[in-house]
Image (tube, rainbow, N blue to C red; front, side, top):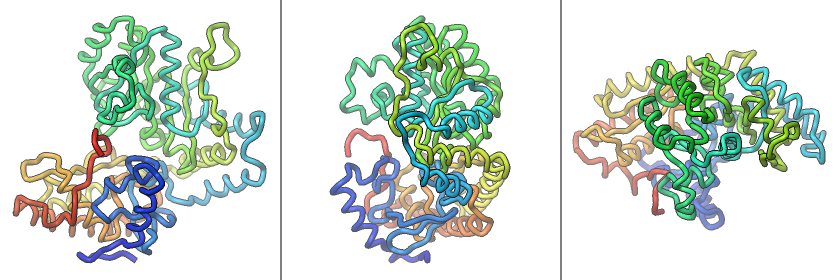
Length: 443
């Protein structure tokens, strides 16, 4: 069931959150899933999921967006994926030597991402991006990493975390080796590369995010990297599969030296990939004469059931036209939300942004500034209406009825939003402290 009253309470979830905080730092294993990201006492603890729906331990059902932080793009417990996993479970999951599944998964991946020549699998995105950085440093002999300042996350490792407000524990000497460039600005990037001439090992960025790359931008980065002798790395954790089966590089036709994939690759199962040019990737192998690079040596990186999940995901995307469906669903949702916001007089304040397959929303105050208080108000009403939406990122399991319901709930939330704007004070509708940004210096 879902409810839509001011008395919407989650007593069992609240108790479970207390147990989590007592045992798990932050109360979750990913900061983006923390209860501080949700209105006070209204952070559901999930019991189970099916398709585009999840149920909390209090028995409430929600239409879910951003499933698994964008990883569950086919919906929960997708039959083709779960069947592929089941076939492997009784055959063993990890051995002292590579499984034949590893070569099959590599062949399947490289048949999908044809711009890459070799691939190595891991369990999470941070390991893959850090391995790419290490390869770039080894290949160039240079110390500095240049990352895109406009992209929110690349890795839990020091080379990136040292650039965030949560840099405690990262030595200053490490921070000094990471520099930043703005997305879409080739001139500024060239100035950076000139300033640190022969010091920058790589440029790492998400090839696209909530905005499309400016015309010629990615090709311009490719030319800059070649001219300055650095490695171009595309972080395709989000764009992989959601932009095209071969990621943004497949859609825009610009080939990086290295790229990293994850999230949608396993539909919730833990699998990531580092892919790229043979000349670079082989430095982590056994068929070269140079210094060896310690590259993604993970005990669990090739668990057979996760690789089977990845192969099933790729097959499903290809045979069922999943990327096109994600875009169609997102376009329908974005249009509905924009219409609902406009009809309630908050069209300039509840703003949907991004590619249709990767929608986010902004909540702006009476002065059109981003507001955590108005986000809190908005999320409270969505939750009470049975919509769990830290973003509006769709899965292919959504149906028309789910989107219609979401738009109806958004309209109800926008009616309250309008009242708060008229009062120039959202406080009476917050129900407690506002939601907080994930990256902040103090708890």
